[in-house]
Image: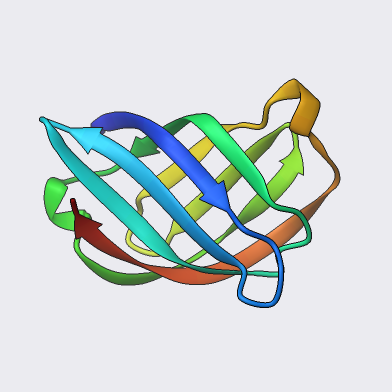
Length: 107
């Protein structure tokens, strides 16, 4: 299963937007959308994306996952997984389950 490095940034609040950015073969892939619930804003600077095929990184997909205590995980419905550790000064306790949707684009 191929993988790529990147980051995940989530804004808390009414809109609860997120953007996950990964660099693959010199192309920036962005998975952005909404997460529910989003109790705290946070940033994961050492995220990893695992995917089956580059073709998986297109379209709009729902996801489920977890935020906290030590990491963030988005299990995207097509088998792609975005995960990464929360910084030590940004750990979230207690952890909570999330779901949402996002759309893949390239930048």
